[in-house]
Image: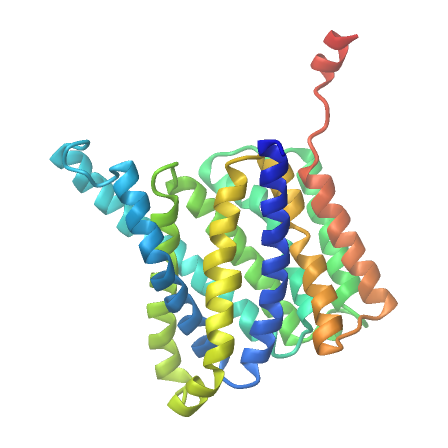
Amino acid sequence: MTDKSKGNAILLLTAVVWGTGFIGQKLGNAVLPPIAFNSIRQMLAALLLCPILARSLRKSGYFSKEKNTAEQLERKKHEMIKAGILCGLFMLLGTNFQQIGLLTVSAGKSGFISSLYIVFTPLLSVAVGKRVNIRTFLCIAIAIGGFALLSLRGGLGGATAGDWWTLASAFAFASQIVSVNYFVDRDNDILISVMEMGACGIAGILISILIEHPQLAAIGECMPIIIYTACIPTAIGYTLQIVGQKYTDSTTAALIMSLEAVFAAVFGAIFLKEWMSMRELLGCVVIFAAIILDQIELPNKKETEHEK
């Protein structure tokens, strides 16, 4: 098996694992308030990744005094604090908006609306000085049309609050991706992942205590689901993503990982008996088409002429 095939297989497994996460989140909402459930799983996932982080830091010497001057160490510490706070804030918004949305939308529908982050990300990248081509704007328009088919039955009033919460989560996830790309390098990826999950978890738990007042008995009852979502879709899923992307290009990676929405719909139908109408399925197809169109690299005109 070639490295690229290995990477693609790992990313396909990542998409499957993430797809199951929507089922766990949906089941968790039946027992715990959404912010409490989500924050506890994020904290647990951060703790589970700590041994991997320790090994990564030792191997890279990221904070080593032998490889860094005192000034470099100080700069790295400040950068990582900023990264943890900013990326953690957007993760807090994204994961909790999605979790709240799952109170009223199906796992499959949530998966497809959430996947809009893939087409929103290039648009938000403008904020950090990146250019966006016409095709991306076209894909965003197509994706919004898909959202309308999926959620806006009978106009704006036809969408549930959960649809809008989930759409907001897609914007927050796109902001999180842009923020991670701004701070990340090959030696601090797992560090940023742990810090953002930790920041998201701590802030979320405090918010939950203030506004949701979760009960310890409910937390205990929900613990098997929390452990599953923390270990499999979160800790293992994000680690598989990092490993898989080392072996394949970003375009292929995004295309494969976007299958998360498909697996969420399939698992939702199998385990939760959540079936979509023909209109909703058409909306999913339109959203998925927009994602694929945005990620496929078209041949360069000059390169094509040169090959001739």
